Image (cartoon, rainbow, N blue to C red):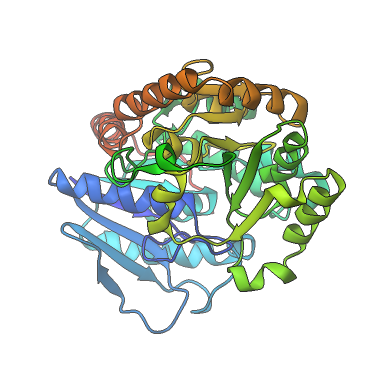
Length: 405
């Protein structure tokens, strides 16, 4: 099968950790590689954001990344990219007029706009993964939401005009239904994790470490990640330290406003000596960092999916997470960890104290987490689900009556 991945701002070639580089980049890269291993031919179309790279770059056997000229060849914040999507879509239409792909998989709402334009003339079926929905972002961020005002209306139209929406969790299906996208047009295929890279066996980990219980939180230093809740909870968790990995390079932490806010909160709660901000941690060091923790905390106020709990469970480390978004699918409450209400440091502290007070519970939850990831969240399982959806839309494809302009 010839598969076109459209990922306008999230290139699989990008270095992770930038303002617009994260889980979507990993998803596109890993799914493309796994599909290619199965004999499919995958081309990833992403916007050219620098003049230097070639038009087409090999990305492992069976995968090519193509840089699309749409807008200036420099980095542009993703919220400023919508005006360039017609040019992106026109490029796709030209490329596909000669040799059409069997199926297009668009990632993020702007990619959906371009993909539908590109696929219109050739009658190519389009599968859409939103990765995040504007309705959820607006609900939680309010006036701080920087998304273009038309985003929600465009997402609604994409959901109705594409051949299938591939949601990453059940919560997203409910959100889409509330937007007017029928549930029967949606399939759930989760995000995944590399179960060889993230595994419990490659390091001695926490078993050989003495000292206080180590709680680990990972993510960009932005308020919605809820690190302030973990700091507040730490005041009620004696004998534990909190390590926060993410944000700018360590040398730049002193100038980061969110880092300053978190340090101030730690002082106000009397736990400044038990909180460490690491700044950016290279991806290759992340498995070892996770293995060295007693618990991983994932405390966002909202989370479209959330890769961190999967990485922790793959390493055999239990998770305490807020019961939001994809966490409701990935973390099995009282099996692989605990789910707590968002914005409730007391509930978070009680869950952590119960788990750290029982080595047997930590061991059992850690083993169950590894088993759950292998059964449901490996990239092999994700590719299984995506392949099934592709086959269905190719077999049942109908040319849409309209397309986004």
